[in-house]
Image (cartoon, rainbow, N blue to C red; front, side, top):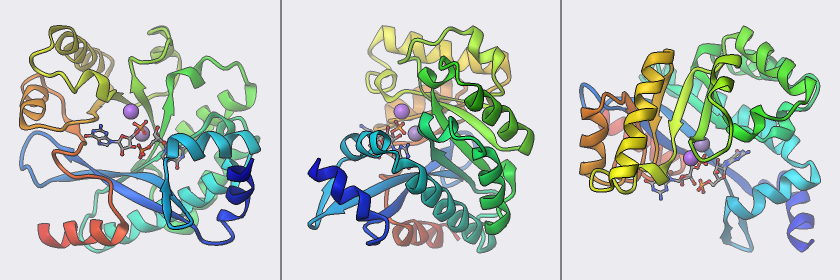
Length: 255
Ligand code: G
Ligand code: G
Ligand code: MN
Ligand code: NA
């Protein structure tokens, strides 16, 4: 409860910051950054609070709605600025809560945020989880289709860890599968994890979906994924999530 009352004021007090983790293109040059994932951060009494703790609290109170809008605005504006200073095709991934997608008019607000930031819809990727696709909220399904019509891309985050049937991959306007880090951490020694990664990469290929591997922490992880034809990856081996200033330094070093 203390957490929730502190969170209710956090936006007005400017306590949130958006951090970014680069997503890399695996084939071709190692230095090619394909996009960034926006990750919300909050400090309470100068101590970082884990998103695993404060995101569910924001969802419970409904404060995830204004905070989620704020994250979208920040991320779209920041990525547009990076596009204009050299990263011309940078994509912007933002995590969504189901609460946001169940809100009537959400897709229209995303359109307004894109317009205000100058970011083209094709560069925005909205990350959703499998469980969300199984909710039978008409608003949610309306928003997903309206977002796809706008040209925004949808990514299925933590893919393989939920309980959604493969039929959903067909039924929804999805563009990207994100291989969960729990399937990457044992590569290449772990035979089950290797088989699962191969299967997800193959599934993506057959269905015409882009595949992004998460949690790439070692050169062996990267090499396995590259050999299996995975196109994109993110993880500590490349870069940890960092402030926009540090991300700017990373881009400066590439130029
Ligand atoms: O960055 P990290 O491990 O700390 O993120 C933890 C979890 O918080 C992840 O599941 C991530 O998707 C989620 N998360 C981070 N930022 C946001 C956000 O802006 N909105 C939502 N809904 N979830 C987020
Ligand atoms: O649920 P989602 O995929 O959005 O969560 C992303 C989370 O994964 C972030 O909290 C981020 O800090 C974390 N993360 C990013 N790269 C790595 C990695 O290489 N290893 C681990 N363990 N976590 C990572
Ligand atoms: Mn994510
Ligand atoms: Na994940």
